[in-house]
Amino acid sequence: MFTEDLSVFFDTTEFADTATLNGVTVAALFDANYALGSVGTYGMASSQPAITLPTTSVPANPVGLPVVVKGTSYLVAAHEPDGTGISRLLLETAA
Image 1 (cartoon, helix red, strand yellow):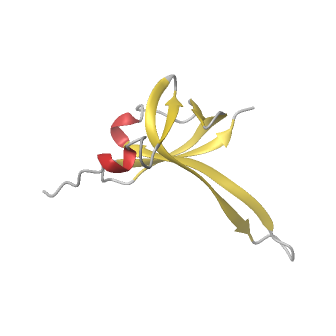
Image 2: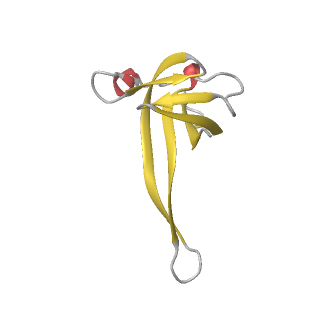
Image 3: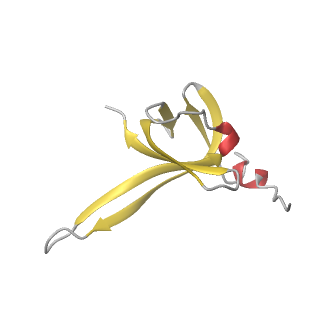
């Protein structure tokens, strides 16, 4: 089986950010992409903050766990493993 070394993407001196997931420091790629939803005539703008990280860095049941990235506190809303050893955690702003 072919396995790719993706560690270069999670190097915090190059691409990745340092985040704290449930009190544990992890290297992750953070994004908060703009999204436009079709709601009536005018539409609605939003963003979906997320971090992408190695699945081995994700706890077994991450939904609801706290995440701090770039000084902002979030909660994990969903876990999307891609089956290749990489996971995307969708975040929501912590109240």
